Image (cartoon, rainbow, N blue to C red; front, side, top):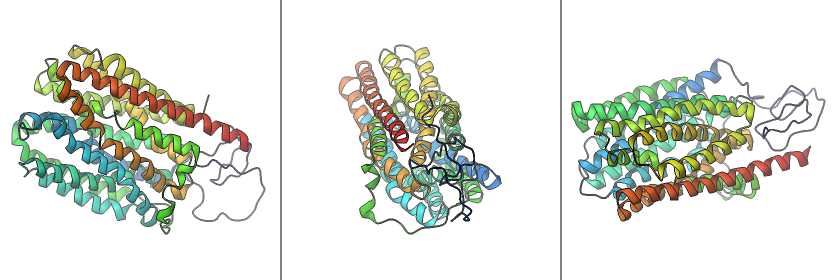
Length: 443
């Protein structure tokens, strides 16, 4: 059953023309009306056109560089454990990636509001400069605090400016095809997550760590330049809402349940992205194969992000709940008893597929329950909660591994992560049921 009930309308706030079409961007559909007044503002989302698809393509280019490289941190985790930071514990090294993801997501509290007020390029241009600078500076790092400042803090701040913008701007152009548009955007980051680990591992072996990071910086700079040229902001700028209204969306039960699910899920969902290569080495994989497991994970994720486009037909919340429960099941049924490299590779692809569906649908679901001019702020608020728990998730899993040792530690990582993702799935299901109840009440 689709999570978009049929509504008997002719004209809605977002310009649906067909009788029975649901409006994915609002919870308050208008009843049938006849009006000849001209539309106010830029009009309904076009759901296509040259500018719309160029914006999607530009967002995919920037996602390839930014989020794709973020998804490859497991390669750096393994490299640092045996090279520059060999004197540090796994949980200490994981803090670098954790700070990075915390700033990436929680920065949405600020970047989402700035996007609504000033448009995409006011954030994307400085974000591209800072991101490239962080990679260049990381190439010179030798001490733990230097990696933390450059690859953790600076990388995270730059990522917040880029990521929260590229997941919000396509929603200004698409309504009924929103899941498809977001699936294409996140496919770019999935391809990046597939290619970066292999490229980084090979480059480090050939030209060393320093020049590897510089080459990555130049590639990212090219992707950012293309993205900035292609992306277009559609809606007019508006004055940022007062800070006192920042948490106002949390008064809405559907949004509150949805945001809570993301917060809990973030404690666990990215655990394999950090520890898959280390687990592979425990099972006897070669260093190259261990690095490639992140690519297997992201290859599956790339396919999953395209599958997320089916949310426009099957229901975005329906598909999101299914993918979330699948992630929980895979963690408990495959990661916990894992004892050979073949199982690990199978887990990598299947888990990546499920995560890909999940991450591509989150912005589309938020847009479905938000007004267009609030999408940036609401996406940012959701990712702000995600960032807070992301700060703790990887270090918690690293501490479990450090305290219990390789075999037992990896098993309990799966137990902890599987339970957290399962709870998140139940909260999304509750939000989906609440959404359906409210829409039926309106009709």
